[in-house]
Length: 441
Ligand code: FES
Ligand SMILES: [Fe+2]
Image (cartoon, rainbow, N blue to C red; front, side, top):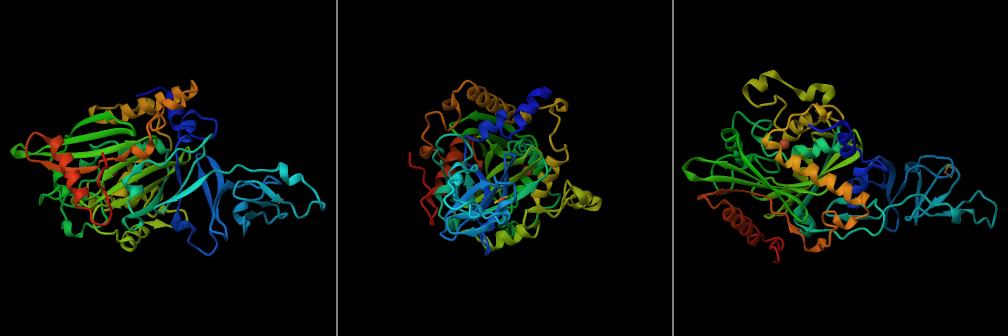
């Protein structure tokens, strides 16, 4: 448990907040590229408590600027999309990608007032289906060479979903390897052949054991956590019969992403991005080391569970997440259906919009959560002392030299589980035909 004051410090990310200052030193997912596919590519974006508008103009250039017109506050999401930016429909003031006002057609001829008018604007970059924004001071950092960024567009699928809670409790579920044995427990194992695009439904590593059974039958993982150049590496060991060990390697990528295995073929890199302090989006990049991703199928699976345009889940608090006591008795641990995202959503939303951590009781399996909070506090302290270069991936590490991170499930036949995991990852990379997934070291 932590103090009320610390809980405030590590959860709030709006302008002027401590954790918000840390977040603003990293690229943040702002929208899916899918959202700009329509005839008029202009969408509202609320990010770290700031109201913005994202657009792609007729020259194909992206812009992310303040949503409120600096004249008298009208909503620029209704702006006229023109060459070189957006024009406010109220009095025709025109803003370019940099947020500079370039024209005020109602002001007197020859007026140069527009030169003084500028709204906030942030650099944006599109990467494999996600538009990332940099909202910090100074130059944006380079992108790390993570698999989700290195893989070609054919091998990455991106999607997002809305959760009605603070980003930190959303992220904390992703660095909690113990919950999968309970929250995502299936009392029956379905045929892993039907597993495409779903998490925990494949077979474990190179065995015939469905992941669902393995997680169910071995609920007490040994968890170790190591600090790395990008965040934390989590190793969860489940000791099986016959001296075998199931090794699951997952990662926390500072400040608010995780990287986890999804199946033998795919990994998930997932950001938990603050919209404001009480709502967040998860943004996932599903990266394949095998065949190109079947994007149509993966999109269809997920669109069935979400409502556009805001990607709000159809099962939610208002309908009890579809809770069915019969199902809970016979089929799933939660009674909330087979989509594990819904389970996680309930787990992170039901503690309330910002969980009061003065009331928590962390156990041994929460070790990564404790370590993560320590990292975040250290980053906050460093920024306060003006030591930006003490932040993860800002600390003299060349982001381009950061690969992986390794996220996999392996069954080790002997006690040398680290070797088994490393070899399993190397074999998967070496066998990747669609792109060069080998780690150049
Ligand atoms: S309010 Fe936007 S131009 Fe007047
Ligand atoms: Fe989960």
